[in-house]
Amino acid sequence: MPSVLIDADHYLDFLYYTRFRDWSVKQMFRFHGVLYKWRHRTDIYALEAFHTAEFLLAFLAVGLYYKSEPLLLAFAGFMFHMTLDLYRMNQWKRISARALSFVEYIVCRKKMIQRGFNPESTFNAAYELVKSREIPANPSPETPRTEIEKLSISSTLPA
Ligand SMILES: [Zn+2]
Image 1 (cartoon, rainbow, N blue to C red):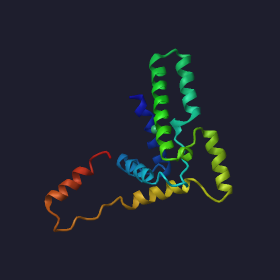
Image 2: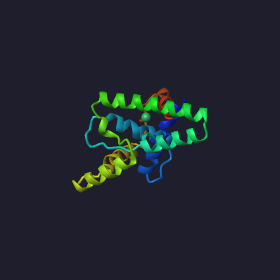
Image 3: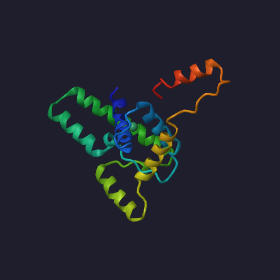
Image 4: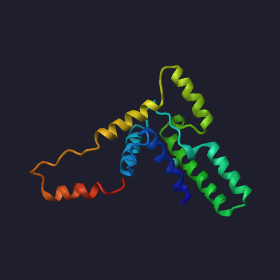
């Protein structure tokens, strides 16, 4: 369970890139769907707040300080999750696509901007794409009713 909770930061960065104007969970899944399709692109450099050394070490410190078994178990879950994430990203040959710490992100982002590329632009482009598809095309009058129903059912699903 905690292993999945760590990915809640995917919602945080979605909110960040929508300037906190779009809180739709469905759009969040679409946004990350676009990024997933783009995973082989070399212009992706991400920061996921909970997937950083700073967050994980702070979490561990709190767990140790309170000698809290649930927190320490959650930490073990996070580390397991990190291992799987990194293993997968390594398979895509994109292990550098996500910063492992806030400090790394700040330093690398600064260097990238000096070279004329802002890593945030890729994410802004992904959100623009999601936004432009926000209003689905009106089904044509010929569309059988079941098709319309299917559309409305699928739009209530989270993913
Ligand atoms: Zn993850």
